[in-house]
Image 1 (tube, rainbow, N blue to C red):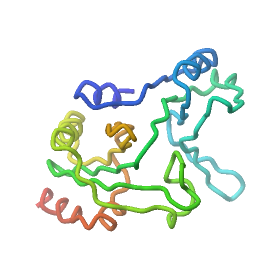
Image 2: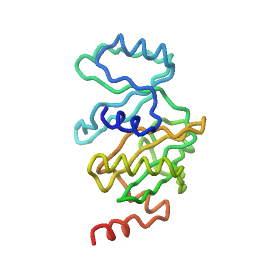
Image 3: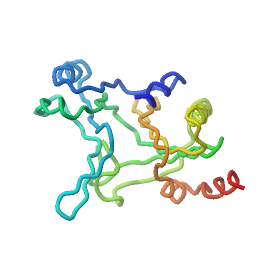
Image 4: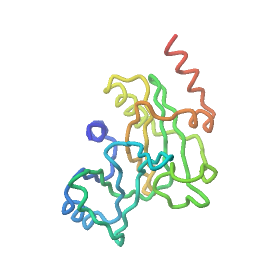
Length: 192
């Protein structure tokens, strides 16, 4: 929640958000907002047999039947679903910003979390965020006392960039490889 508050204080756009353990609050939120997504408060791997599973962001349409009663034991984050052009992973290293657009195609078309399913159903392209948003990204990361971060955005069909979250140890190599960026070189320059 602190990330969302800081992003909003910097003037970044965030989806309508509710963090709750109340089934009634979620039902009212879904009635007011319409299509929503749910994500866990923390990304905790779950071991089932010999396999490790993770809980990703999931869509809850207005028609989806959901029993929200177990929320009292495990609160969650609910957000307005943003109709997207693409997802964007933004890497900040020092004062440099590198962004990669991620489009879900094939079997993933219309998906809500690009991490689910086969990577062959993803298309990548380098993206240039608006200068003002890039500056806000750098200020956001510096505000947490960091020199590196992996930030997630959605480019909405309305042309707005929506901040989702900041990953202080998020994946960056796929951004470097698919965007043609020299992120490793930027790390080396900062460390030298």
